[in-house]
Amino acid sequence: MQASDVKAIERADGAGASAEVGAEARDTAARICALMRHVFLYDRGNQLRVLDESGLTTTQCKALLELGGLGNCPLTWQVSDLAELLGSSLPAMSRAIDGLVKKGLATRVEDPTDRRVRIVRITEEGKRLVDKLTTVKRNGLEAFASTLSAAQRRKIDAAVEALMDREDIATTYEHLKEA
Image 1 (cartoon, rainbow, N blue to C red):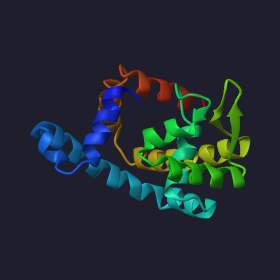
Image 2: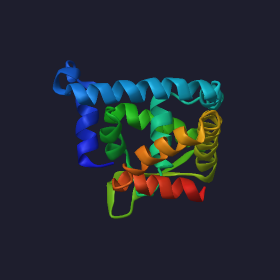
Image 3: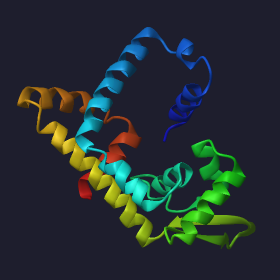
């Protein structure tokens, strides 16, 4: 995630954020929102079902997805870094990580260079859950893509290709291609 992305997320969380966004960006956001809502229908609630069956809280789910991150995400995280990235308090993130550890989805160990710091890492079981969520999402997207004409798919491909100069998106794409 780039620094500009974090700033955009922080603006989106704040009151009156839409006043800071220009009309063109609002229109783009509305189009993307409409597309995402429609695409979500092709998932048929499968992603939510998998999440519900996992018994994870929202914070645990967000943390697990970061721990199982794609592409250029770190392999290990400090609890404080996860809390900051996800906009959570340190105590709330610590509780979320406790739950992931109890479920066998993550491990937490003392940093060998600084005993005050706890390092969090996803387990193989955690990776399997992230992979399952990714597969369910991909299946929904494939179902949606199959309803498009060849011309519509080419237009979407061209629009997405224009975003591949962003390292975060390109790295995630390369990771997903391999999966």
